[in-house]
Every structure is written in C-alpha cells, then in structure tokens.
Image (cartoon, rainbow, N blue to C red; front, side, top):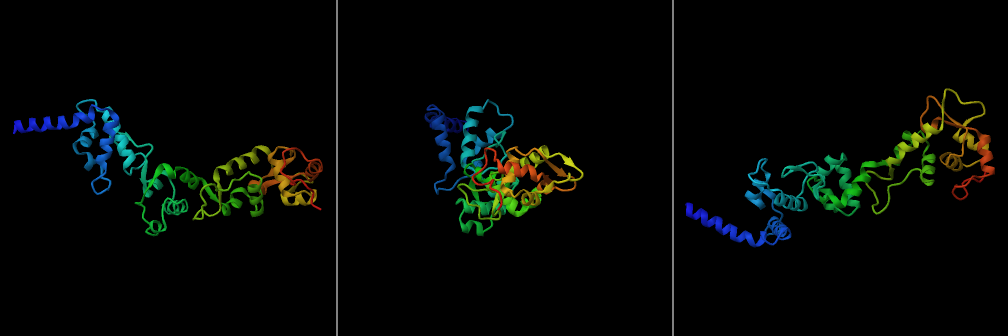
Length: 291
C-alpha cells in the first residue's frame, strides 16, 4: 500500500509539474477547464476541484496557499454564481461576476419581480424566463450593475407631487428645466417602475427650498403662492421656477404647516420686475409675460 501511495504521488507530481512550472496563467487556464464538464455544464467548485478546494477552504492550512488560492478564487468568481458578501476561500465576495436574481435583489435591497421586469426590458432576460417567475435565474452582475443602480433610485413620477408638495403640472416643469431627471438612456424601463425619475435629485430640491426660503408663520402682505403669484405678475410658472433655482429671487418664504413647493410664497412685484428685465441663464422663451 505504501509503495502504491508513493507511486500515485509521484504520478500526480509528474502530471502537475508541466502546468505549475509554466506559471500562473497556465494554472488559471487549467482550473478554468476543470470548471467546465465534458457536457459543457458548469461544475460546482467543490466537485470541480475536490481536495484542492477543501485544502484551500481550510482556516489553518499547513503551508501558505495564498498564490494558488488567489488564482482559484478568481476562477470561481468568474465562473460560478455567487452572492455579494458570501465567504469564498477565506474572504468575502465583494464583486461577484455571476449571481442569481434572488441574490442580487437581496444584496441590493430591490424587489425581485421588478428586477426581472427591468432585466427583460434591458434584454438580459427573455419573456420565457420572466414568465417562469424564477429568482434562481443567473445573470451577469457586472453588466446589470448600472441597471440595478437605476432600479434602486428610481421614483415613479406619480409619487412626486406628494414628495415635493407640487402639482403634476409643476412636476413636469421641474423635469423640463432639468431639476428632475427622467430614467432614460440605454434602457427603456417600461416595467413596474413605469415613468420614473432619479430619486437622488428629490432631496437636493427640498434642501434647496429649505435653505433659500426662510420659514414664517404667515405669508407677508402682498405675497402669494406660486400659481397666484404667476397670475399677478403675468409671468409663466416655468420662469418663476428658473429664476428661483438660479438664485435671482431674493424675496420669498416658506409658510409653516405646508410642505415643499406648497409652502412657498413669492412677491409678484419682484417676479414681474425680473420678467421685464430677464436675467441671464434662462431657457429660451421661459420669461415671456403672459398676455
């Protein structure tokens, strides 16, 4: 038995030496080949690498395994569905290459159903995949990362009036002047998100209003809320919004008890003076007086 073991070890050393002696690239290619079975399916790391995987997973290996462990770890990350934060050969996975929809949704804090719908619109899943409603579907995490960020921060336009204390028409004007940004680009999100904006632009708007408009208990005499201020000054609401965000309006307040734009009161005379002598930086035709 002892002699057979020596022969076996000698045979293993002889077979492995040509690969190891060539360097890290050859070792990596060999390990990649081990992951793919003869039928073209991906083998689980433990099944593909056997005792090597067991040894490198040990908390106290007998020798320093870092060079080969790093190579094996990179191969597994590249070829195997993993979860963000999953422990792999002694280290947490921070940037998985492949992952299931369930794992991504859990790690990113998004709804799995919404993820499937958006991935369908992006061409990363097909209709049959989505119809199965399976969260075990594996996708390329690296390709989907930008899309995931959109999903995480997208806010349906229908929710904005409540969030901003604004009418639907005012929300559309905020989009038009570029204060709110629609989710567009390479992906058309005709999904559960529907028409949406980047929610990261909502808080800065509310913070700007709080910093720019002092809070008062009652509107000063002659001041009016936005719609009435537009009528009295004969200026477009778009113009009032633009001069507000450009910092040209110096007389304005937030009335206690209301929220966002619903709390703002303006001086119609100041608005009219600005409309008659428009400041720089306005969009084309935004300052024309209402006839």
